[in-house]
Amino acid sequence: MLEDRTTAASSPTSWPAAYPLGYAVVDVETTGLARDDRIISAAVYRLDARGEVEDHWYTLVNPERDPGPVWIHGLTSEVLEGAPLFADVAEEFAARLAGRVLVAHNAVFDWQMIAREYARARREAPVRQRLCTIALSKELGLPLPNHKLESLAAHFGVVQQRAHHALDDARVLAEAFRPSLRAAAAGGVRLPLLECLPLTEWTDRPVPRQQTGGYGGYRPGSWRAARRRPACPYPNPGRYEEGGRLVQGMRVAFSGDTSVDRELLEDRATEAGLHVATSLSRLTSLLVTNDPDSGTSKAARARQYGTPVVDEAAFGQLLRDVEPAEGGVDRPGADRTDG
Image (cartoon, rainbow, N blue to C red; front, side, top):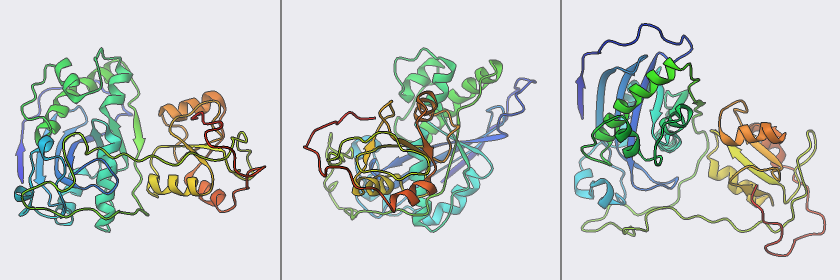
């Protein structure tokens, strides 16, 4: 583990009072992208309210399994063998996050990985809000060719030294976040903060443990999770009506954090005969979210289209009594428009 401190530079005197008092810029490298993948390294740059670096921290983590795409992160089973388990670094990691907004590039991924690791360790990460630098760059209207970290870094003249190394990626993001934050403050931009919920229910699938002289079932080009749900066999009966029952075939979309693992909720919806929609349109029957006033695209579209909205707890109750579709199973492929 590595720690260092830097002297805070001068910063603007005026600052929006509603902005957070501190940030934890985070990057994690993982064995893959699926819900049962594990963190193998983590880095945190702590920043003050104006984005100045206070300190930084880095650790390897033994995932007790195959390390995944070594050709990307460079961390082999041999390197990770003597590293601490996540449970061994959970307390120190939490101390770095406590009282701060978690900042990451594609923050939902980093947060979900962190939340699952803390759930496995029977602990709770002290994170209540997160900020995605992709969302912030969109709010600022930055002229980026794409949403890659390297593009954001190039825009602000930040030099990457070791891409896909957690410590350097966190450094690069911290250096790019500071001018982004100042631009937001100068322009009176509302930061795209989202609520973070700890996981209370989740599942892990069996995975290969660490291997010697190889990378298990992983190979270049095949490490991304591919998970396709069976097509919903029922036609869309329309929108959910408040106080009524869900009906098989209804299009249900999810947005924001849930205390039950998102994939578990989606599995239960599918098993009940509902169509899990990956986006939201006028055909969507219901949006499930714990934060309906958030700035996510699904929440915004739900407000635009007048789509009914319920929270996670209410959806769980509705799943207990889903009304069968009229006329039974529809022909395969009918009415498949994703909502």
